[in-house]
Length: 563
Image (cartoon, rainbow, N blue to C red; front, side):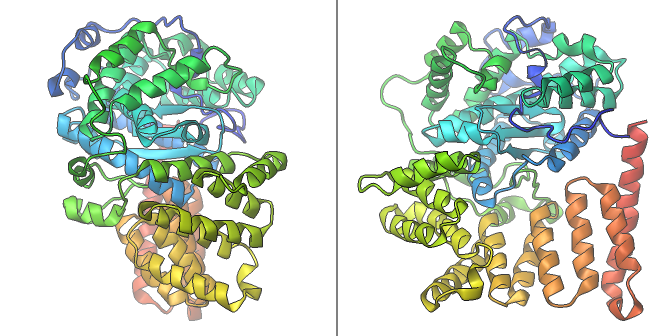
């Protein structure tokens, strides 16, 4: 049984409105429990965000919330507007990981919550300004939010706020009020809300079909919950080493947008700003100049490795044996983001979210001006690539490479690889370009970030070095077994080597990574049914058999939960 009685082919297209957007009004009808009102009455420091006992039966259990989140995530992964862009993903992780580490250090996220929640990012191509928290520790970000922001700490402030909704278990507290509602019905209603901005009729049908209309008003975050998420989020943001002014400047942007909102700012409706919220954040800023304006401090950056395991846009780094700080740092391999890097990432988000050729042509023109900023130059190069003008894109990217600061160079190198790896490019590539691709390939394969691993492997495949791709990706999936893109690329690499059994098994792992257990079981069966001549690897066959049984058990559990 699916989460919705009617198909949702574009469940998050143009509107990942978030859980709290089910009733998008400033009149919030939920009455906060007394314990929450007390937590919002002014307590500060780590103890201010202390949670009620998680095992006392007071509300939805952590396990139930995680299972519900997994169901919703499974449909989001299938949506055409779900995007897994490794470059943007690494950037968002460089913000997300320090926040997770700070939340755990402060005591906002106790060990049980850290272990059992997903703590995963999902990203939508939606160009509207929004972010959202879902049950089970999933956090969504629209490309429009990244494109609007001017500084990394602004995006981080929104993430910190949404993280605090999860860590304070606001979602579970609201859902527990509807204790008679089946979890799959709740999931259907939430998916209906996520589709609301795209197709109101489909959304209404999904919500009505779930028999959950009466619960809509009770799934809004209360004013107390919003204030608590602000206060806890501010502590998480600054505890991670980000400049607290990012919270206020993002509020200012939202407040200005509220004066002319034409539907492009769903976040304003799901998280309506009030004067006391803005004043509260301003009062928390230190007097005098900001202590930091360029991202996490070095101390906070070192703590990011101790954060809960996390990966890029739906990826979780499940490190063997817990991994430890050094292992997590090595697996994530993300630099502290600067404003220079943010300018490029905002430009990337802007272009990837836009499907209008006219808009892309305008960015291409402005980015070729002599006084164009690095962000404009990046947007122009990426726009040229999307418009099919590969040679121009390459020229602009190479010019940009000489203009950016050293810390932004890897971001531009990734753009150069995008251009050089464009479909059909390697077939007739001039020698200088082939040499450049080889240099970038070797550099990426030696890197530690997700983008470098994936781009390096893709370049190795494109240049006929499948074994190098296999070696790099085998090491990567060992620490990031839920990276669907890595498994898909590894499948291609195995196929290039003629290793059909391993290729099909990698396809199965990619489907399992996106919680498509039925599809994964089917691929495992295909692997087991290969002719005997293609099943000579006894060790791989044993792995396929073991994984099939594991995934079949997960499939049975998911089916039983939805009955």
